[in-house]
Image (tube, rainbow, N blue to C red):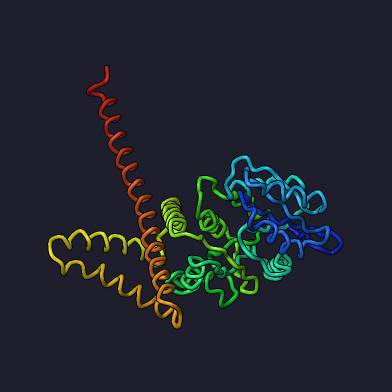
Length: 356
């Protein structure tokens, strides 16, 4: 992969920070405050791509942009994060001279000079993409329990971009920086993906020889969902689109993705068969007991309520991902069967024996 020389302004590599936004009044000010500490020069702009906020988020950004020439508010008519980043990349290409595109979320916390850290890492490693670890932070009962869960193996499965123990080249991680030319050459995000667009993109990037570097020094704080229903919807959607990524690229799922699918099948079978004999409920009871023990270990010296909530969140996340993945797989198989029978029917209709 040919890599052009970075463009510079006053000795600084010209880059943009892209923030997809939709109804983020509770977070956008803090995010901009954090990111603007590293953007106080003419080489680094912050672009907020608003997907049609109706809670005043766009007004907050617009007022700040009036006083800050390096901050831009851009309308994202398609609303989704994937569309927002693709739109920003296209605009950046038209602007010319921009080397790096940095993706930031409107509901995360960023350390001081985070953008500059990413640019320095990309320049040093020659990586096409720099990804970062995520540390889940609390704030309220559900979020506190989520922080305990998703910062542990029970919640993250040991994913490198969740543990953040060491820097190095990887196949996937939480997206932070792209070399703009590499992002565009790989085709940008697949906008049919409402989730898991990052992992799907990474498969295409690595297939064309792109290099992804995990920078453990650029860890961000992720703010999780604040309700059980929110966690279920998030993981159900993640399961759907992670399976869709696998099917699109004919790639095997890893153990972290296969485990929730196998769990859902085992639990469903165990509960159904338990109506015939109680002993067949052992797998389901065993899983619940194992989760409870793990939650107690994770939240040692904390209240029984906190331990219970961690266990419930784990069960919700595990089963939601599994059900989401299975929904996509079943839909894919049914579609394949319909196409098969339709093609067979078409062949019979147009066979020589039946033709006029």
